[in-house]
Length: 109
Image 1: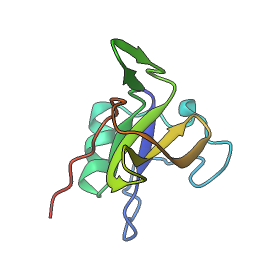
Image 2: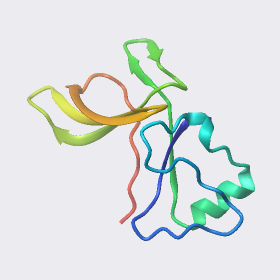
Image 3: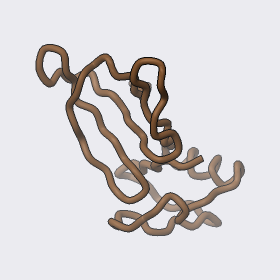
């Protein structure tokens, strides 16, 4: 599954798991591939994974496996909200209609 790995500020790389192309502009989805057991080690170290799940407009789902769009709760005008999106070599923010279906990342206090 293509996606984005986010590491906490206090992250310490666990032994036995390699992380390549961290914080580089040309880090493509194929740069880091992990087994279930390797991902479990990264997750215990605080890493989270956001899949490139695309988005939904009406009845169509777009960009699955290519882009990850994640909504925020912050308004950007009356009918618009901010969102974060990423693709194989970039990350950005945008603002558009709240009617477009995007993934939501749950947060634990």
